[in-house]
Image 1 (cartoon, rainbow, N blue to C red):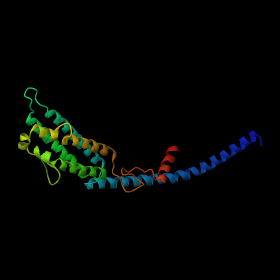
Image 2 (cartoon, rainbow, N blue to C red):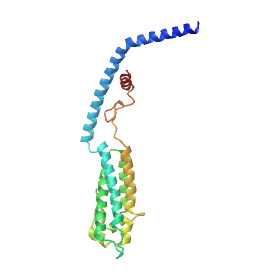
Image 3 (cartoon, rainbow, N blue to C red):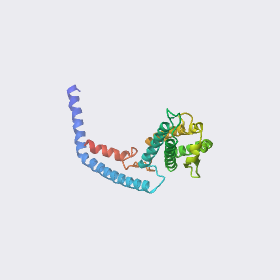
Image 4 (spheres, helix red, strand yellow):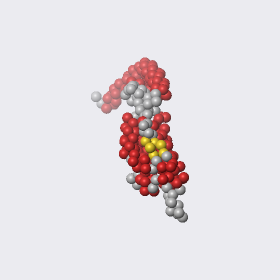
Length: 233
C-alpha cells in the first residue's frame, strides 16, 4: 500500500470514529449531565448536614473552631510579650511596677484559660492531646505558680491572687514570667504549636464521596469525569 493510500485509509478511520462520536456525544453528555446534577445535589445535602452537625456539636472541629484556636493562641503570645514589657525594671528605681506587672499577669492567665478551654473542647485528636500535655506541665509548675499567687482549679483553669503576687520575690516572678525556662515561655511555645495545628487540621465527614464542605471528593471518579466532560464539550 502506498503512503498516500495509507493516509487516505487512516483519515477514513478517523472520520468514521468522529462520526460515531458525534452520534454518541448527546448520549454521553446526557449521562454525565445527570451525574453532575446528582453530584451537585448530593454535595449540597452533605454540606447542609455538615453545617448542622458542626453548629449543634460543641466538640466538632470546624472552620470556626480553627479561627478560635488561632485567636486564643495568638492572645497567649501577645500576653507573653506584654509580660516582658511590664516586668522591665524602672531605670531610676531598679524596681518593676507591680500594678502594671499584675495587670499583664492577669491578662496572661485569662489567655491561658481561653486557650486551654478551646483545646480541651476540640474535636481534633492532636489538639486535644496538646491540651492534656499543657495540663500536665502546668501541674508540674504548680509550686512555682503558687509562689506568685496563681492557683490551678479543678477544671484546669488558672486564677491569680494580687496580694500573693505583690509579695512574691522578683526571683519567684522570673521563674514564672521570665524570658528563659519560665512558665510563660513554655506556654508561648505551646501556643505556637496549637496555632500551627489549627491551620492544618480539618474536620472531615465520614463519607468518601463528598467533602465536608460539600464539594465532590477526588474518590468519586464518575462524578468528576462527568464534570470534566461537560467542561470540555
